[in-house]
Image (tube, rainbow, N blue to C red):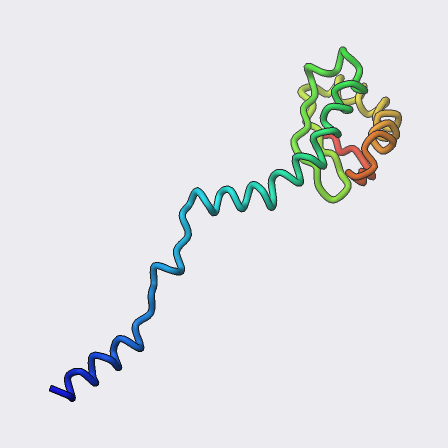
Amino acid sequence: MEEIERIEQAVKGRQIKRYDRFVKIGQAAEQFIAGQVLPQQKKYGDLVEVWEQVLPEELSSHCEIVDISGGSLSVKVDSPSHKYELHLCSPAILKELQKECPGARLTKIKLL
């Protein structure tokens, strides 16, 4: 009987509580949003608002921001003529965005 108890205690000492490693998906999502998404949204949310104010009204329905990364604002334009118009006014728009949103650290506007 002693031998069986000794074996049981040895086995209990080696058991790993596997359920401790698992995280509920809701908790993981909250942590991801709080750590990754919200800081980026705060950083670039103002930039999108300024973009909408600075962009000429005739171009606003033809342009869409698709990415902000590495100091580059990528903008999708729906036609070559609107792309050319935006190309002409993009230096002034970039200066205004840099002035109003220095935290975004924009260096260029990339037209797609």
